[in-house]
Each structure stands twice: as C-alpha cells, then as structure tokens.
Image (tube, rainbow, N blue to C red; front, side):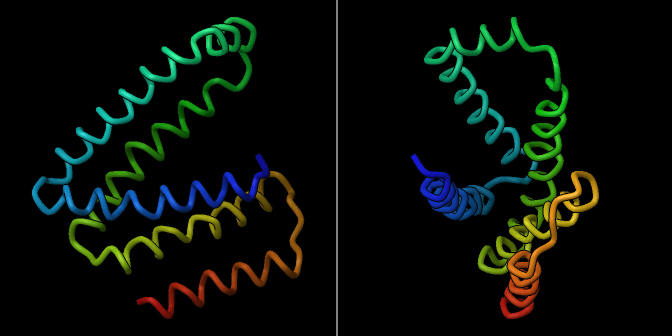
Length: 139
C-alpha cells in the first residue's frame, strides 16, 4: 500500500480517537483515563505478540541497535505526551485542542532540520506557514 494511503488511514484513526477519549474523560479523571488507555495499548501489544510472534522474536534476537529509541519514544508519546494531551482535552474543546496538539509536524520539521540536516524547501516552509495559520484561525 502506498504511504499516502497509510497516512490517510492514520489521520482517520487519530482524528477519531480524541473524540472517543474526550467522551471517556467527561466521566473520568485524567489519571484514570491514562490508566485505561494503557490497558488498551497492552491489549494491542498482546495481539501483536500473538499474531506476529515469529517476526518479533527474529528482530529481538538479531537486532541490538537502536532499541532504546522506540522505548524512549513510546514513553514520551504514550505517557508524558498523553498526560499533557488529556489535561488539555478534559478542560478544553476538542475542536480547538486537537489542532493545536496536532502542530507536532512543525516541531518534527524543526528538529529534523536541526538534527538530521533535512532540507528546507519552499513547500515545507509553506506547510509550516499553513500550520501556524490554521492554529491561529481555530483559536
């Protein structure tokens, strides 16, 4: 499947999830919401292990480089970032919180340029301008 199709599927799921989570956070404190979300992640992890065990075993046995980066990324995104996001989502409007939290491509762009020396193009700069304009218009 082409990367853009996967990206569209991602956008659909990630766009729907905050609405589902906000519905839960209406009735739950942030910490309980995070706890239950982690249970959902754990269930997903178990399913991956069940259905992709041989692939996972092969990678774990043969690859020892870079394993700490996904662990750090998982902790930062799924715990730290989620705590921040749930506090914003619980107290704010989803239609305003999600687009602001969704400015992470801007941060990724800047960090990619700084750490990986990724190119700066007119199209990328235009994207950055549209991200900022979008947040400004939705505030």
